[in-house]
Length: 334
Image (cartoon, rainbow, N blue to C red):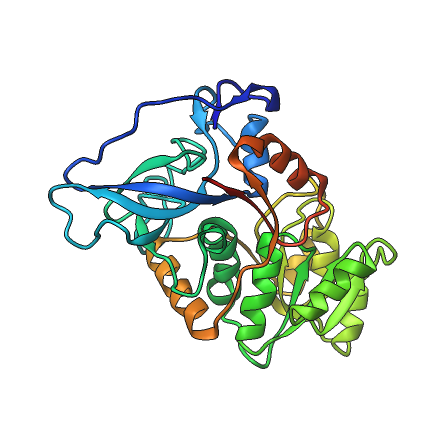
């Protein structure tokens, strides 16, 4: 699916030549892809200066099977089930301007296609228990949540974690926090969604629509102490309450800007309470591999909301934008 120019009206299926792998590359027959809020920003031309704005194949998160291997590739064989890395150049260590420059479905072509060539080290094996649809949800949302729970803050059984809403990062955050033994406080906008959060392992539930001071409520639920970690996906509309919810010396893992990008923040409150506000943007291939091992060990199953055919990618993006989903919105590539 190609975006010929910025805007939802510029999406179209195109017939392109089937790519061939070079000596150090692998050709993957893609079977599934998953959507992220970031894809909406790309579609609207709001993903920054490095975004490709014309003739871009959309979506960053995809899984499939190896269809051909380059002459120097020995670690992969035809038929292997694989999932791609969001940042093809970030293999390990900290992020920098060089290893995060290329992003699938952003600055380079993504995975909304039948076939795509990957570097031999730009893919990882799909966990045996996961389908292609489930595996496709992992490169961006899952790895971002993983790094919130295990890198921005090393979550353990004694900790409390607050998540926001029922999108992909938030639900993976619930699952990873529960797997670490932590207590989860989940916020959402309806009783139905809150009950779903409980079924996924959240202990305390807060309806942010009826409780505009949910940060104070979160503090009360922790006996006045505050939560250890907030997985902050909202941005402008939620950051003030997140600051109120977190304990002194606690951490806010800042992920997204679903509710906006600009907001006045009480900086003295952050300083006086020794808060750590850490930006989290996906992760490296090494962190991805570590996360996949945890998923296998704990038998974590991604939560899928809806699956659309690739021909209906526009409808899938519209559904994601509506905010009505619980879990990941995915695309099946026949």
